[in-house]
View (tube, rainbow, N blue to C red):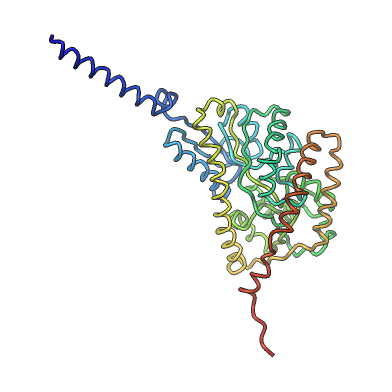
Length: 374
């Protein structure tokens, strides 16, 4: 073998090894060695509800951004565990993750209701999420979950719009009209409505309309125009009361089993965290489009009558909420979270109310019927 041939072979062997090394660097070793990471999730929503669609929207964003290296499959409520059993299932690893709301875990620790169940000291859902990310809420939630042994990583996201007071047999004109009604709600709202003399039954979304149809409930609230329409509320009631303080600042929760999440490559965790925020923004835009369409069609096609909840009822809700908070004076974590929210709300809501114009004037200018000239 000549020296030139030997040198050429040595060069080619080195180039091949270098190319292989470069290819290896291009993909996380966990993926190249084991293939795509698969996760089995469940939502707390019926398959037909727009909320389950939101869960799938998030999963698709993450699946796409990882190039298929992570594959999240989202099953509907009840596929593996009941809706209210999601936290336990994710903690134990029965499920790798899930999509729901924090208030569904209210029975584990009442303080979880502070992420969306109640007036949030005047904050809307965007402001509550701002408190969560920048005002200490994230750290407090991690502390809360650790205190109850929940092996989860939680991402509150997806700010919801003010939820209706609910669906009734006839318009509600004063708090006394609600006394004795069998009514569905969840979280600390249970205490708020109980203070109004209501008999409360906490049910997951898919069970509400059947309960109303069978007479087990006289009235109920769930969430929004699209979900309520899909779930069949207009089939059992033609009266919906709009505006309420019982859940005017709620958001969704994306939850991972902590052991499973911690084992992910750093790059994949970054994709998930940014995917949460991308899905949050997209959810808001989609909800504006879909909820407004269903609000219009429930009036024109379903013949539903919408009424504004009287201010006297709203004021009684605030009093009821204050009484519910006072009953938790021995829950140190509840009070720590509530005080953190109060401090953030005092600053953020004042800025909002002082700074942002009331859009009713502009809407009326362009769309209100013009008065006939004399």
